[in-house]
Length: 335
Image 1 (cartoon, rainbow, N blue to C red):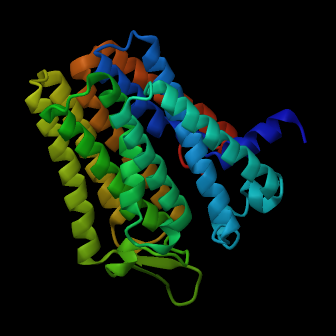
Image 2: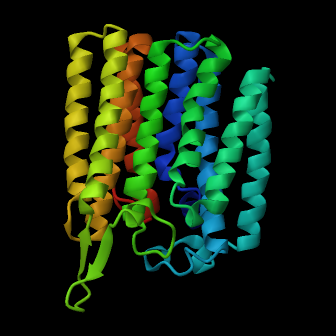
């Protein structure tokens, strides 16, 4: 097996294409806490965010496979643990070795500041609960949303050590965003699977249409209400953060455009009707990126337009290049 194929398999296992989800949050948390992006500690936190993503999602990939969920998932038969291109024993050793390294790195970053260490323990524990028990609990979105949101809050609090209304609003927006992505988007993506699902407990169903291999999705009024309440809550929290910091009209307009596009993709993702998994994944991916970017606009107050624009460009370029290398397409991962 050549180097490029080996690299592709490991990047698939670690789901490296979506590093753009957590890495910018750690970057922004540190930048806001320090009041600048021009500090080497911001770069150190960016690296932490990337490692957090790879370690956490790599562990999730391994545990889901080891427990049998991904072994039986037709949509994941091309993943490296199923194809045998990465041995389970090797994956386990690498992932848990990286977990130890990441833990030590995090403790060094927070300089063993006791409150930050406590938050770090909460983050790690919440991630482990999700990875090991998430398939069995319908409210699995809560522990992983705590873990992901702390990727932003820990670096901020390590340096600022004060919590303003602005930070409360931004942190809450990230939390709601993650709740939505796991409880709604994630459950739609894996609706075929025999696992605990909040939207299915609220009545969402997928049924074969006249036994022709065509499936229909019914979201139900409760599921749609949950989706829109979460989406509008996220938008409201971002608007609140922008208003509290007296952002310019340009920032408000940008956030509004992103909010509108996120709502549009939310509607397409959750709409009852023909269930084409790849098409739903496209809406899920767009909504996730748009929602994250909308929340990120609240950071312009601190980092400025140029740094924000550079961050978004880097996110788009990285996502496109790595997705193309790993999955063969620019946007919709084969996950």
